[in-house]
Image (cartoon, rainbow, N blue to C red; front, side, top):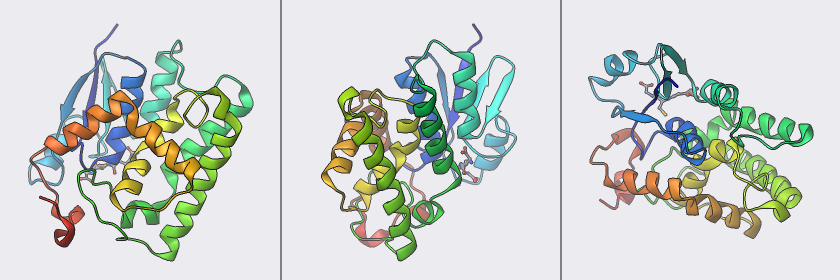
Length: 223
Ligand SMILES: N[C@@H](CCC(=O)N[C@@H](CS)C(=O)NCC(=O)O)C(=O)O
C-alpha cells in the first residue's frame, strides 16, 4: 500500500486542514504529516512543492496528489471502502454528502468573520446579521440530524462520519466566539471536542508557537 502523507497548515488556524486530518485519524489510517506554517514569506513556495493550488490541505498517496479538502475526502472514500466514512443507507448518505458540500461551498460570512483560532477566546466578536444567518442554517442542519439519528450515537448521523469532520472547525469557532446554542447543538459540540483525535489537534494548536496576526484580535488575546 503506498504511503499516505497529508500536508497541512497551522493546527490553530487551518480549518481546511483539520477536516481530512480528523477524518483520517478517526478512520485509523496511518499517515505522515507535513506541516507548513501559513502566511510566512516562505509558505507559498513551500506549499507549492506539494499542492498545485498553493493551498493546504493536500494528500500524497504514492505518486498521486489530491488537493482541496472535499476532493481528499472523496478520494479516501474511494481508496478505503472498508472504512465507515458515510452512513450506509442511500437517503442518509445523500443528506451527508449534501451537508458536506454545503459546508465546503458556503457559510462564507461565518468563515470570514469568525476565523478558526482554537486557542483564542473572542466572545461576541464577529457577529453580524449575515453571520447569524449562517449560524441559523448550520444549527438547523445539526438539529435535524441529531433529532433523526440520536438513538444511533452522538454524532450527526449517529456514528462519526465525514459530515462531522467537515463541521468540526465550526465547533471550534462556536467555542472561540462563544456562540450561544440550543442544548442539542451544545451537546453535539461537546461530543466533537471529546473525540480523542480532536483533543490531540486542540492540544497541538495550543502548543504551536506561530501566530497569524490577521486572525488574532490583540485586545482579547490570552497570550
Ligand atoms: N477549498 C480549499 C480551501 C483551502 C484553503 O483555503 N486553505 C488555506 C488554509 S486553511 C490556505 O492554504 N491558505 C494559504 C494561502 O492561501 O496562502 C479546501 O477545501 O481545501
